[in-house]
Length: 407
Image (cartoon, rainbow, N blue to C red; front, side, top):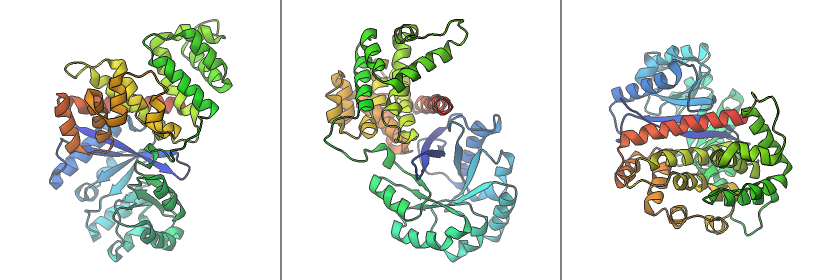
């Protein structure tokens, strides 16, 4: 039996990823009776937390998991490690005596509890002493209205999370209103589009990207580019010596390191390191999402008929957030890269097979299952296969994110 799983990052005021909400459905349709909601939650927990005690798709960070009322009343969370996830009490739950009793028990046993899509009501006030996080959907509850509630209950040691933050301006407004955490796609859009030259490290990134886009990598050119940047040079040598730790003699020259990596691994190294190196103040989630999309598109490319060149698919996913990483329009940026017409069309207008693949990746990120179904059909791919590919790409990017955080 297969599942549909998407994740959405949760960031703090410094735009550091503190967790992911896991969004689960058992099929392409987004409507189920209560029993199916409970089954979906149980399967998500079993698949991600039961055996290892930590989620395989969140890079070791907290997972925010939706719990229907029946699961809470049955104390389902008690079966799983309390440190691994945050219990989201769905807005559809009834604030009954029975639910309050379950919440108090979970609170006493050390679980972290959140009220999802909270609408202020006197019926929920008695729950607040046992709640750690309150989530406001700022599309339903305007930031100004939420501000008053936050000011009143901030002293209760409750943290507040703004959902559906879609622009950088909304992020700033919500932060000023007292929100502690933020969820939405503001981080995947440019903070500003500016007519300015790239910073030195961003320029180095673009130059490296130019080289990995070519059919054959010129190692001499790559060596010269990396040698101009001390930080990137250090990362290259450290990375290569880490993966060659069994060798008796360490690798000490850039050329030696590049040749050892070879073309494929060099492309991967540049993809892993260059974007995060270019603008360190960008959220890790943005960097991780670009890598996850690259891997997702690459895996999908072999399932499409006619097949898409995997490297073209990888670059499409990788560069889908380049405008946000470098704060320039995608049209300006792709002029500096030797990309094929197919990749350019996908990035600018999301047309062609690569464009549909990119739209499918975005739909999955947003858990828009209707669009997932539509784009899967357009590509001629079974949705079950797409679901499997997406989960594998999440696991892959989580491994990269976790390893980069420890270096």
